[in-house]
Every structure is written in C-alpha cells, then in structure tokens.
Image 1 (cartoon, rainbow, N blue to C red):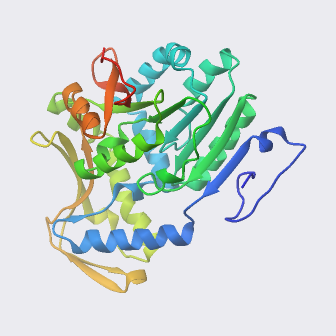
Image 2 (tube, rainbow, N blue to C red):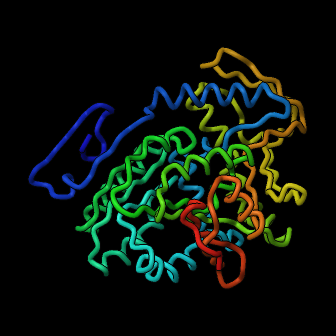
Length: 351
C-alpha cells in the first residue's frame, strides 16, 4: 500500500498533489497485537528456562531508543563513532563503484546512517529505491518518509517487521542491490541464528549484488567492558528498561531498581554478556500470561550477547552462508570493520 506515515494497518492513502507521498510505500507485517503476542511467548520461554534470558529486541521502546541514543554519545562507547568515521570516508567511493539502484537496510531504525550513501548518490543524480526494514513502525515510517522529502530522486518502500522473520517480505530488486546491516547488530544473534539470518540475506542477493556488514572487532577486554559499563550508568538504565517494557506490555510487576546491571567479556566465546542480577529473591507476576516467576538472589537474567569478530571469523561466517568477502575496511584505530560481501558466484578475491 502507498501511504503517508501514521496510517492504520490496511489503510491506503494516495495524495496526487504530494510528490513525496507518490514515492513512499509502507508494508506492515507486524502490528501491536501481533508484537505483544510474540513478546509474551518470548518472555515466558526466557523466564521459565534455565538460565533465564530476555530477548534484546525488547529494549527498544521510546525510552529505550532515547537511552541508546545517549549511549552512542558516551566516551566509552566507540562503536557508533568508529562506524560513522568509516561511512563518511567510504560512502562516495563505494557508491561510485557499486552504483546501487536498490538499497535494503536491515534494522534501519532512524535511517540516519544511510544518509551518507544517499548524499553520495544525490551528487551522482542517480535514482534509487530505499527499502528499510525495522520492527519499530512509528520510527521507521516517520524516518523513511522524511527521506523522500530530502532526496527528490529517492523512492522508499518501507517494511515494518522483524528482520529474523520477515526478510522474505523484501520486494524483488529493482536494479543492482546493496543490502546493509549496520551497528554490529549481527553480533546480537547466536551463531546458529546468525547463520540462518545470513542465508536469508543471501537469498535477497543476485549475482552483482552486495552486502555491507558492520562488525565490532575483538580487542582488549578493558575497552570492550568499558563500552558496556559506562561511568554515568546510562547502559545500566538501558538494561533495566527492558523490565519496564515488560511491565507495560505484559502487566508485569518487576521492580527494575531491584536489579543490578552486569556486563563482562567472555573471551572463549568472543562476546560481551549483559545480565540483570536481582539484589534479593523475587517473585514476579506477569498478569497477561497469568503466571508468576520466582527469581533467586544472584540468579542472573541474560539480556544480550554481543559477539565480537575478527577478519578470519567473519570470512568463515560468510563462507558458511554461501558468501565471499570482497573488501574489508576498518576505522583508524582498528576497532570496527565494514565487510563488503557477495554471493560466492559473484565474489572476487578479497582485498
């Protein structure tokens, strides 16, 4: 359906006098009722399993997004700055070399990072379609529609859905495609889920298409742990916010302040683990699920794994999913990488 942002699921709005509206389309595959149902299943499974866990996708309500934005500005959190440095320096040459006419951004959020590429393409006066996919419908729709107003040669086809479940809803490519997955969000996926995800991404690509993947790199423990244990305590509040989301959406009665934030690097798995640890024994009621869950003092709830990568592990990960590394770019301090990959039948020697 072609529509302005803010429409209800199933609505279709077409305004002939508004040229940005003619260049904007949004397909919604998840709504509030469906989101809460999936969330209830995830939360029940995670809190009744041993060890307990909560899916990190539920950090991101409005407050969670605002807290994460604060995190990206913290001195300890290098990831966003390092990736931004890479995108600013690489965008003009990448767009000149790849000449994409179809850009799919997985987990698009506010679509801020893609502007580096759109600015470069605008200088080339090149028409392009942008396909953002994100679970946060309000943010994705508002941000995507704004791009049509900023870039006259841009068409947007937004997909509101979960990137682990709705990649198959991405429309067929219109010209050479570039798929992008920024922020090292792939590091939040366990190895098996990561493999399945990359297989789905490969199916979006044809010979000649490319994937650009953001990857946080293995580095010294102190730097990694500081990024998730900032001195201002913003990450701790972000971590506890997942309990507030569950309280509001599922009628739970978590006391977020009764949980301590704990984040540490596990070198054997090359990952940061983020946990919530109760300060004393608790019984939490989840009204929407009609269950109560007991949590012992010191029994942690895993809220996020953030895997870190090397060039070698990234090559193996891509190869197992039927893709090959074409180019590897790192920031000036070697903290973060952008990996350019293609299907095996399209890739050349890595450089």
